[in-house]
Amino acid sequence: MNKKSFFNGKIINEDQIKISPRDIGFLRGYGVFDVMVTENRKPFLIKEHFSRLESSAKKLGLKLTFGFTDYEKIVIRLIKLNNYKKAIIRTVITGGVSADAFSPGKVTGLIMLEKFKPLPRKIYTDGAKVITLEFQRECPLAKITNYVEAIKNQPLKKKKKAIEILYTKNGKVLEASTSNFFIVKNGDLITPWDGVLSGTTRNLIIKLAAGKYPVEKREIKISELWNAEEAFITATNKNIVPIVIVDGRKIGKGNVGDITKVLIKTLDMYCRNY
Picture 1 (cartoon, helix red, strand yellow):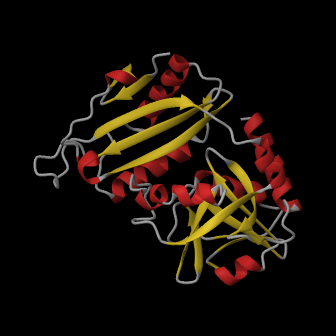
Picture 2 (tube, one colour):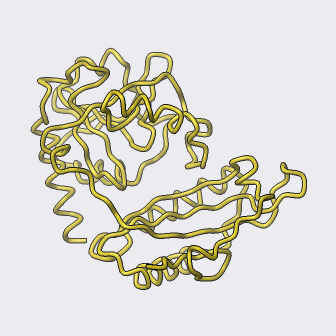
């Protein structure tokens, strides 16, 4: 199958995409991106994803070449052309061709699709492990293309059989490399809010939890983590993944907690009816 992608104003075959060697995204990593999935062959939470993409671009001084209406039309067209039962939609915006490798030019815009590959069901029923790393992402309020620390530590993550790397800084839990983080304590949901990326799935979980569980959006100290009753991560391509072990230590009883189970079912139902 020759995948169809959107590149600088045109829908073309993915293998026809040519990125200039002078693109500042390639030379300096100067760019932003967003990842979205489809539910029932429709782009899931597309308004929220576009809003974050636009916000990320503004923080880097990049101007999108399309508004929401055009973006939605392009994405829907690509979904039809590629015909995946469920897809990942990846949008990348860079500073474009730069004459001096520092000054952004006309932005490069790319939207491409790939087949969605779900995590094993066992992860959702039995829970997963994460490892911690003392690190805070550069420009954490924007979804930038710099994932050097996460990529560099993939071998360690695999060695430890962890699903994610949980970033900590100065005694506080922040976010995971590609996910947001929650703990459950005394029946309350607690999630870090300042200095982390605003996750679309995280924000949806907060809305779905409204009226069921109190939600606290605040810092989480590492010491609180060890006293948590439950923990989970949220991400567009993972939904809610229960975390039962952090750095080899059990969270709560070391199994998937009741509140996490309820939220998983609630989100699954929301997605099915989307």
